[in-house]
Length: 263
Image (tube, rainbow, N blue to C red; front, side):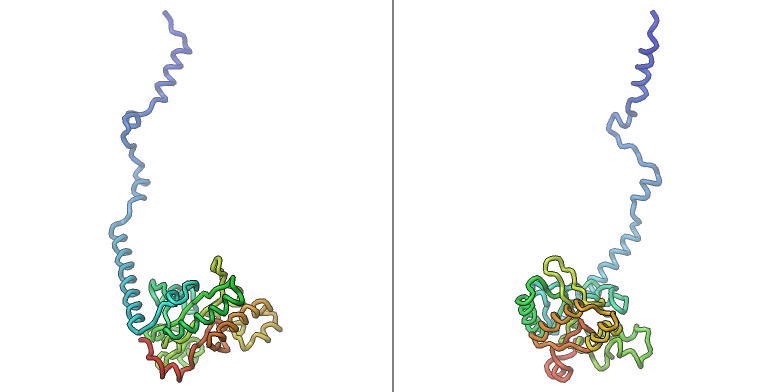
């Protein structure tokens, strides 16, 4: 008896489409060599990265212990609502280097933190939708020395960019704070006309009228700065003429009388 051609074709198709023996038995099908190798990490490289992470954590832990030993306080322990973005714990600064390691908490003198709390309470009254975004506060003298040594400028003009560590900065005493205003809801900073650590007349409070006249600042940017200045003044802070973000709780003479430089 002849088997019809269509029946033979049917059985051939079924046989060809059957799973392989390994697939049918549930055994894993090996990946091509290039794929499997790409998923395998280099143990030596992984160990090296882990060691770097551990060293960074140890250095940060040591720095934080020094700050606490100096009697400083974490600003968010005093004002939980403020936000912190330590610019010197990143490369987003004029220096382009991270000099704080993995430090995430911002420290200052307890008295200064209380003054900042007063400023924050004033901000909450006048602009409840806003909060502070703190960029820097205490800056140990050892870090100030790094900034000074690494700054690629002649010594004669370095003080225009960073304070001489031999004389000390008010940041070194923990009585200066760099900050801006931000949305309380999403943390987005307000437009102040320039970024943090911008060197140039547009960042100078003393040059705002000139910059407005030249079209390098807009009225709303200056208005945002004025909000910051007004509330910081209520807290007892004073600004400086060349950086809209910088405020001092005390002058140098009083700072030296009341506090030691943080090494």
